[in-house]
Each structure stands twice: as structure tokens, then as C-alpha cells.
Amino acid sequence: MDQNQIMLALTKGDRVLTQELALLARAGIEPLDDPQSSRKLIFDTSLAGVQFMLLRSSDVATFVQHGISDVGMAGRDVLLEHGEDGYYQPLDLDFGHCRIMEAGLIEEPSLPRRLRIATKFVNIAQRYYARLGQQVDIIKLYGAMELAPITGMAHRIVDIVETGNTLKANGLTPMNLIHDVSMRLIVNKTAMKVKHRLVAEFIERMRTAVQDANR
Ligand code: PRP
Image (tube, rainbow, N blue to C red):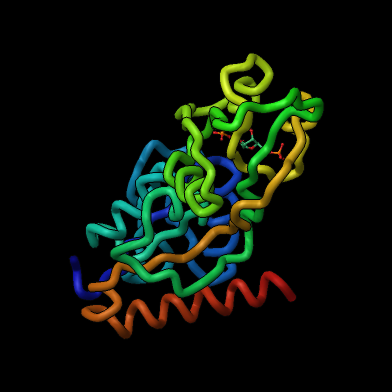
């Protein structure tokens, strides 16, 4: 950990990266190379002492937990799935809004008592059904969750819903809201202590940028 540097971890999915960079630009932080075209993974920025690295969404929390990155931007869906120990979440970045929902077929046949649930959010789904006191079998998938109810592999899915178009196009409908999701700023707990001034300034800079974006 360099005491005079802040290392930021960004989620590199295409849509989300564009919005992260727009927010950083509003905060006066611009990359010196173009992350959309460069193959680099670490970027210097126009703000002295601030660098960022590009990571898969599910790795952002890991890098922040280990203190490799001091701060990070990640979706609440990924944070809930990863586990929320080892970092603070001081700021809702107010973009990337969507929901984690339970969904099923519009024309749902009668269901057995013990459901099969397809999802990539295994931990979130487990906690959700445990809270309901409902015993389920979880089937882990990495994408195209909608296929599971259509093909009979699972009865329902737990997945991200943004517009609802993907569900609708596949004869599915959202049924129960599990979590509202948006992008969050996360901060390593040690960095918050050891680099308090730098990190606090960075959070305030981002807070102002989020407020400006909503004006
Ligand atoms: C998510 C999700 C759905 C889709 C929902 O996938 O898994 O497929 O978005 O969006 P909608 O409600 O606006 O149709 P994403 O594009 O994030 O990619 P993924 O397959 O990697 O999860």
C-alpha cells in the first residue's frame, strides 16, 4: 500500500465502465490512456496520486478486501453474493439500477413443494429461501438463466431484472423482489484508517460528483 496513492478498482463490463468513467470525469479524474481501447489493466489518471485497475465485477470486492485496491466500484448484486466483510460501503453511486428478482414462467404449471432454482447468485438465493423457510435445490448457472424454466431444468430463477425485456421475450415474468441493486463505492477498512485523509477526500469528491449527476 503506497501511503500517498489511491488505487481504485473499477468493474470492466462495457456498459458499466462507460458510466464509471463518466462519474470519474465529473469528479475531475480522467484516465491518461483510453481504457475502452487499451489492453492495459492499470491506468494513471489526471489526478495526481490516483490510479485505477480494471477487474471483473466479482473480483472488485476481493481486491479491496485484500487492500490491493483502496477503493472500488461494484454492483450491490455482486457484493451481496461475494459477502460484505472487510470493506465499508460509504456511497451509493446511483447508477446501474436494477433488481434481483425471483422469476418464473408466465404460464406456470403446478409446482412441487421443493423447487429447483437456477441462478448465478447462489448465496443470495440460499439466504432468500432460507429466510422464507422454503427448502429448494439450487442449480448454479453462469448465464442464460431464462432457459432453465423453459426447458424444465428448474422451476424458477433468481436473476437480475433491469427492463424486464429478457424475461418477457422468453415467456417469463418477475415474481418477487429480492434486492434493489445499484453501483456502490466500497473502501478497504485498513485504508480508511491508514490513508484517512486521502480516502476521505476521494469519497467526498465522488459524493459531490454523484450529486452533480442528479442535478
Ligand atoms: C442480465 C440478466 C438478464 C438481463 C436482464 O444479464 O441476466 O439476462 O440482464 O435485463 P433486462 O431486464 O433489461 O432484459 P447481463 O446483460 O447483465 O449479462 P449476464 O448474462 O452476464 O448476466
